[in-house]
Length: 384
Figure (cartoon, rainbow, N blue to C red):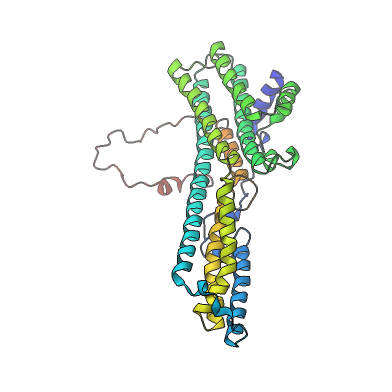
């Protein structure tokens, strides 16, 4: 197995694309923020407007019909319902519904950003730990094949644990679907087939894949440091271990948001109040408006606002899954793989060097202090 890994590393040094077929043209338009504002109001793929508008349109039609019937004198007993003519009572009820919906919206918004922040912290911490360990492999006095073996195993395991973490977050969100239906298990990885069959079997049968991979990374790091494959100072090794642990903490923070749903009694109460609001608004508008058109318009606006806020809170309270408004985990995994491969590719291997004509005195008045990245790299060969 070691010979196979070493052979793979030699091939990867000549052609890094062997490790992973990187797709630089993958773009998910919905997740991008460029030029999004002009088309956002018309987008229906991930919008709550169609569902909210359907309920609001139905209420508006009912309100217009009741107002028109009342104007024709077909509802002579309608004015006996004095509760509908009491504006204060209706305003209090509408204010209560609005307060509850806005509070739920605020909590869902916090859950969304906490989940996003936790997943990004997880990715950053695991990559920083990998970069720190790979940096000390450069100064290792051990056999180069052993050092390369450690590096190849490390990036494979980190790529695996990142995908497994995203898969577990998605799987819990969609209520324990079969593994083959979890989108995160279809993400590209950094050559997991390079591991031996016993390793892959242990990973397959494990119901705690993230914890198993995390334990493998920790034990492999300690064993490699003990064998001298890499020799970081104890404080640096401790820092790398802390970064790995912080990434695991961030994963469990995201898992907490997925495992613990919004309290059901609160959701149930909001749904009942919204339903009553949809039913009562057309009736109330009859006593406030004489025009069927304006009764329908005002009813539509009230019901649409309440429905839209409720649907938005449902969409964003859990950012993990396959819905259009969820995090783009495919792109996150692709970027993580690109970052890990960068640690092995030639771009990261050579360290920066200064030319003979470089400035050494930064107090020199002739120093071109206004040099920019674009100005410097424009004349350099290669694509941006």
